[in-house]
Length: 118
Image 1 (tube, helix red, strand yellow):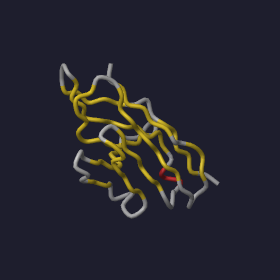
Image 2: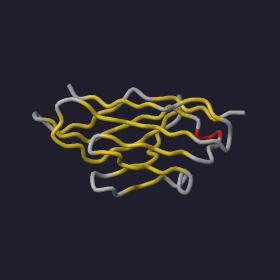
Image 3: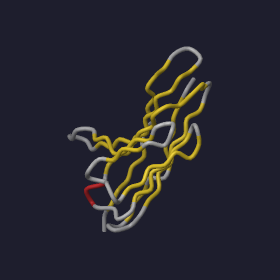
Image 4: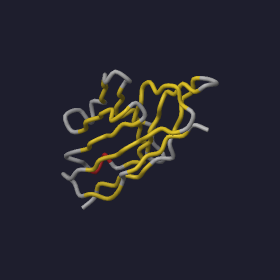
């Protein structure tokens, strides 16, 4: 079974930093684009940033210049979040486009909570 798992969430003061990590595991042939989404109850899910298997990146306007996504290995990525704002508070989810030995599928993690508050 293929899974992705996030780590690194927590409570931080405004202006602080956090680093989120995500790694994929299981019988994997390839991991293509990996992405971070965030979601608060009652709001729409927001695409935060993506990184392709070749290192190409995309950022939402709301995080440009503050967040940096990187591909740490073929199966892992991280999101460095600096200058955090209260509006960055959300559950952050990792998503990965994964090719297994049976099919290609979009796999979601369970999420990690980021809270920015004084």
